[in-house]
Image: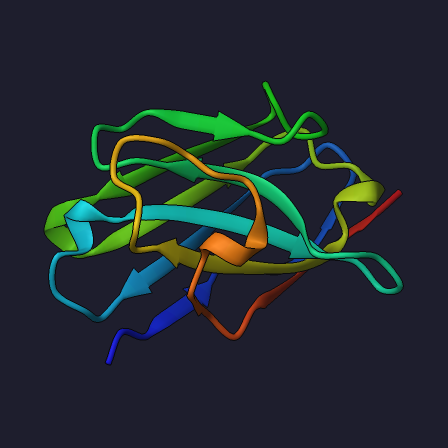
Length: 125
């Protein structure tokens, strides 16, 4: 049973940085596309970033050039480095895995079949 555990959330000021981590418990972690999504109160869960087994990445428009996704296959962990945080980045951030894709990133939630419990990020102005 694959499990994902996020960590690293917190409360920061606008302009600050945070790094989220997501640890993956299953085998074949390095083969999966790993993604980050976020959900603010009253909003749909939206795509933030994802990374393939070949380290190809894709970002949502609102975070491109501020956030960086990376992975350490030896540690079964994917990271989301968030810089220049804005109040609009306030949300619960979820890690997810797409186990049916290896070389492409798909942004739709329906392709991600395992989700973490989420970690809260709050950015104040």
